[in-house]
Image (tube, rainbow, N blue to C red; front, side):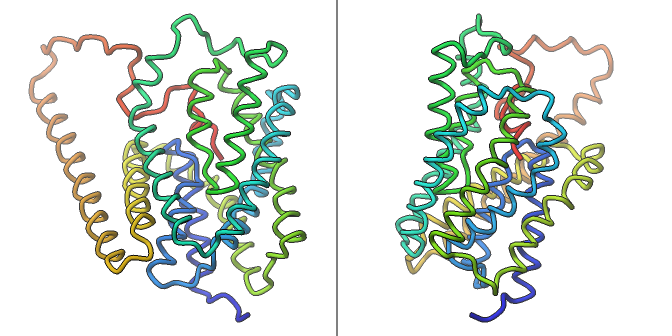
Length: 333
């Protein structure tokens, strides 16, 4: 096999950096950005490799999270980590096997399109879901020594691992778990980062030893995927002081919608036109939203300080579509 083109390696590095930066600032898991971006670049004609090679690159992406995992070790709960890690590892390997067996199937890519739509709908309704959580449930009472908590941890490992293996994006399972489990945000952040690190070696063994998917010609892309995570951390910390996180949230939502449309139309003669049309609509909606927000802000400033205060928002002060404080997205790597 020929060496991967330099421009393709540069795309992998750029997507890895972008995924890491957006994951920190916007609060979305980087898997959506990286996976969707790679598939879209492949659809545009770049040599990004088959789906199993995308999974191989993401293994190195996950392995690069070992440093943040070490820094968060003080908040680890080993019982919870073990309860999630065992089923997560098993079902991630099962999901990875499904991906490897269907790496050239257009229907598998279409299923990913439906999966992206599910994530988009779930994320846009995060406020409603949070309001539906039992009010008596405090985010500090999670203990796997209780049966209900243990069952929740095992279910997270089962469905989250399966989604991670098949699509590299376990976000739906994570959102539901964090919203309804009552887990402390620091405990979740530390354990999830460690979970990603601990499961990555097993996935690497399955892909590179059992399935023999390690391709020497793509070593550059493997290194780029890992390097991008390390580069993204200081960049994200710097940009977070100046950039409105909502801008990045809107960009990720647009990318998710474009990726869903592209994957649902894959293998059809109008796939490119569908992608371009949805991309145009998504960009137009973002620009319209920002313009309306700027206009509303200007009108509010023009009213002066005598304006009556707004009525308190129900449930919490966050705007619809934003993650709550204990959101998994704040902890996603």
